[in-house]
Image (cartoon, rainbow, N blue to C red; front, side):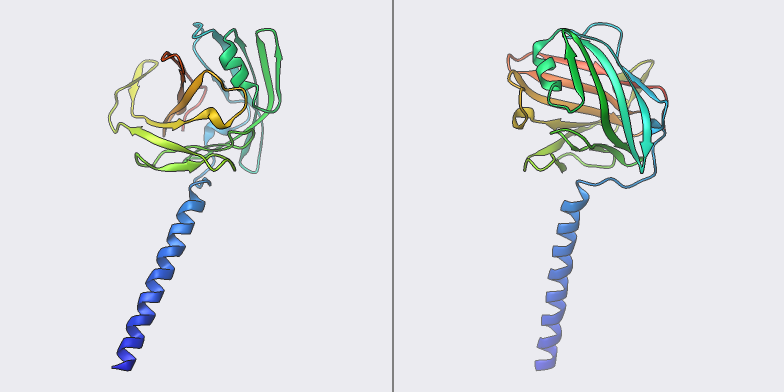
Length: 219
């Protein structure tokens, strides 16, 4: 009997240890990306938004100027007349603002077949993992806050150029960053084939603005 009790106790402890290890690994995995290098992170790939001005933003364009150890470095520019958005992007290192002209150098992202992760700035952390489920969270840098998966359609219902595609949407509260007064949340919209396909900015006055994002390549 003692041997049986000892065996059951050992099995119970082993199960608890494995469960704890799985939990800790899950938390750690939430902030890391696996998968293969995405074609969208290769040198020379360009990213643009619509040519139509949206909420005072126009002429957005960026390109990958370097790729090292899976990290893509971007250089880009945009015309931004909206002071709230201008203040928000001022959080990123490498940003230069002259009047309504904004340029950025040295912005780093990791793009794999599993998802997208921002490497630089106060908002560093995973933006999306394509296989996530609604309610999943990703740590937002070292702020103690998280980004949360709020939608995963599973059907082709999101308009994207000439297509309709499936999307996963991840919501972030920017209030932990500096200079984000007037902005209540940011939603990243992504697709496993096209990467980041849109960014929606919600303002505290109840209005919002959605910016489509187009990459010159796809996975």
